[in-house]
Amino acid sequence: MIVRELTGGIYFGEPRGIRTLENGEQQGYNTMVYSTSEIQRIGKVAFELAKTRAQAAGTAAKVCSVDKANVLEVTELWKQTMIEMQQAEYSDVALSHMYADNACMQLIKDPKQFDVMVTGNMFGDILSDEAAMLTGSIGMLPSASLDESGKGMYEPCHGSAPDIAGQDKANPLATILSVAMMLRYTFKQEDAAQAIEQAVSDVLDDGLRTLDILDSSEAGLKQVGCKEMGQAVLAKLI
Image 1 (cartoon, one colour):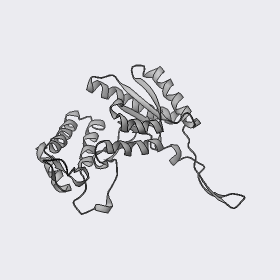
Image 2 (cartoon, one colour):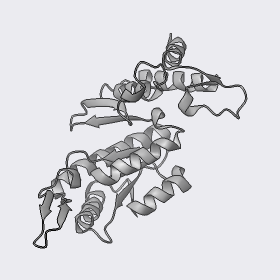
Image 3 (cartoon, rainbow, N blue to C red):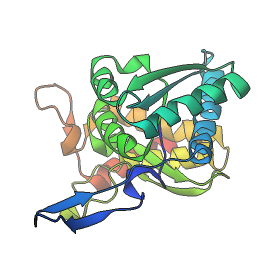
Image 4 (cartoon, rainbow, N blue to C red):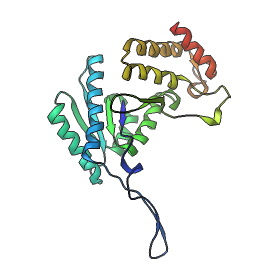
């Protein structure tokens, strides 16, 4: 689970823009900023989520905080704040730290070493898309943008796919799994969430594949469109 801060960091920091230098050359600039309260807000989400997931799985809770504290002072503050939070409030959660570039490599090398990863806006943007491909396609990964009360917008990690709209090609599973996330994290309906996830798993076990997750070299698979895949999941739920 990747917990990404969404309303701060370099995407929203000021000053920003394009300016002309004294020598006539243009220069683009952005500012990466995080306050302690912003870090604490997202850190709490990550720690609490790790505890919830560990309890459900019967495992130890762990959080990996991703930064570039070796070169970016803003993420040095991020790291220090996460350490202080863990020591003061979440001593029952194991906290580790990893530089963003190494985290990208480790996700590919050994994704099972992670449970909850927490990071800022820019690094989270990169890591979440990378993690999507670990599932076989970006069309498989659900996501949520939530406020402090757990309400917000659930959608596939990739957002919309207007280039294939109306062509019955899109993979609907990330959207369906986003509903499962909504039931679990906003409405606290764990049984319903698990039922949806099991239905998706069953359909995949049956060999149904949209084009983005089809391996033509594997026997026993059937290519289906968006509509047929959705109907198959629904049939497993009824």
